[in-house]
Image (tube, rainbow, N blue to C red; front, side, top):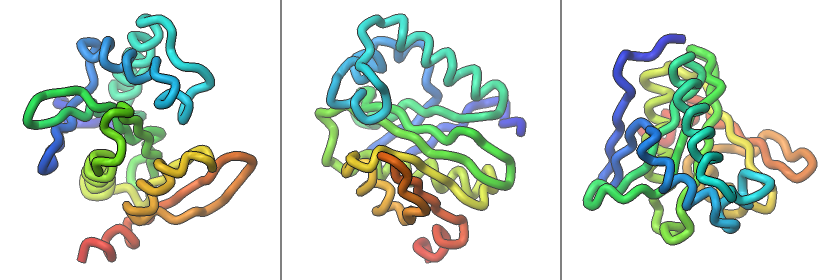
Amino acid sequence: MEFLLSFPILQTDRLLLREITLDDTLELFTNYSDPDVANWFSDEPYTQIEQADLVIREFIEKSQRGKGLTWAIVLRATGEFLGTCSIEDIEAGSRGEIGFDLAKEHWGKGYMVEAAGAIIAYGFKELKQSKIEAETYSHNSRARRVLEKLGFRVEEVREASHFYTLSAEDWLKTRS
């Protein structure tokens, strides 16, 4: 699948979702080096800034290949970097997988439901996805709560992971 030449910028009441760039390396490193954040998606917190540089380069490369879009989540009022949200493993007109992270000091404020909701809408409306999937550790009650607030349903529980799905049809029902 080929994307538009310009990366889609999404806005919500409080947030701006823009393309992640190498200018975000320090902020991403700060988030990913926090054990309370990294514990949910990585084996170990980052210890070197080069790790953040590398992952941002991977995000950019996926975007260029049409296999994923990763947004930096920033506060509209201040421009402060909060985290990332992505839709990856994109199959045009078929499916995608959402992923997200948020700096610990911003947990519990509804930012991730707001950001992920905008990305889900983009996936269904613009990418014409029929379903969006997500996987999270079973013990990650915060991520599971975000997914469930957005209408995702548990499809499978395997080992220590919950697998979720949200169909375009179910998403549309919650919007009408």
